[in-house]
Amino acid sequence: LYKAPTQNTGKALIAGDANWQAYPQVTGLVDHSFGKAVEHVVALNADNKFIAYSNVPPDLPKVKTKSNSKGVLMMNPGVADEASWIVHTIPGFPKALRGYVFPPAEIQKGHLLICLTIKESQIDPIAKTLRIATPLIYHSDIPDTQMNSRPNLKKLVDGESRFVPPLTVSQEISTESAQEMYKRILVKQLKSTIKVWTTRDNILKSDCRKVGRNIKLITSPISVDGHASTLENDVSQWLVSEPGNKFCAIDKPYHKSQAKEPAMAVCIDDATIFTRFNEIAMYKRILVKRLKSTIKVWTTRDNILKSDCRKFGRSIKLITSPISVDGHASSLENDVSQWLVSEPGNKFCAIDKPYHKSQAKEPAMAVCIDDVTIFTRFNEIACSFIITLRYCRHIMQFILHIKDISLQIIKNHCSFCIDCAIELCLDVAKFQSVITRQNVCFLK
Image (cartoon, rainbow, N blue to C red; front, side, top):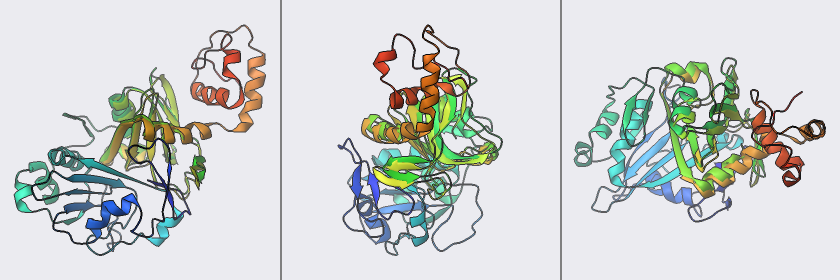
């Protein structure tokens, strides 16, 4: 679910649907899938026990924590194998067992919510990942009988951690020295260039030094299916791989400071999710490496980190603000979601930290989904707003002067802009004999 700034409705990607679905008002609990997912979190139910975590828990202001992760991990304590994991960007939400209240102040901001149906056997591996992100747990009512059979879950709730972040978790656990999340972990794990939507600092930039492992920063504003968003009002942080169908949501921004803080990325390998977020469009060191592709990222930036296209196929591209999500506008100024899509591929990731230099020193988490539908919708957002119409004239002038060129050396962050601009301004087939889409460099 993507809620654009100032909107009390959202756009949803639901299993089985290829396109964005109009979503009812998030201020109420009825008639929408996310409300159904949290109905037994906000009200007591014997068949649902859960832990809830957030760096801004409900009614507990000014809590000190380096984690930026927010979510709910729930299960059926009975015989049925039923479990879910919710990852979101909303501070002060949900109020455990105290009724459904969407914080009114957050309507003005853009937010991202992901709900994953999982097996109960996956709870402990997820808990191990969360131990790295060191989230602040503000509610836990999972029975001891369930806790005792899940050592990582028990240690998570008890506040025990032997890990030194950052560290990557997929099917196996491996440790890393303290590194900036996006380049050292995400790019390496994804094994691709990444395009990133996140805030930046003044230190980290786009990085295209390594072929196939670039970090490209998505330019603000973006549009999520018609809903505009900018880095100034969008708190979501996400990326997409390039190539590949990976989408990742990250809990820390693309800031230099995040290298010394715990961080988490949830990555999804799904063509639909990837396509949708790639249309809009932990970042460089982790997500780009993990997805093994370029990523397009929606997240606030600081003044340090930039788009990074130094490594071919492993770029980080920052999605431009505002964006439109199926007609709902959002901008970085009022959107707190952070997500990315891979390029190529069907990966969509939601990240719990923005694209800030500071996030290299903090815990962060990204939830990545490999799904064609989710990818397609978000990829539309990313691609449409990384380049604007004002570049078309320059590109036309450039192509008119390179009639005999078959290949140009790629410099920095030109390949993605040309790729999107050609689709936007030109009949690509007409120029196939003249230009190679991934290898033409935009010269000023």
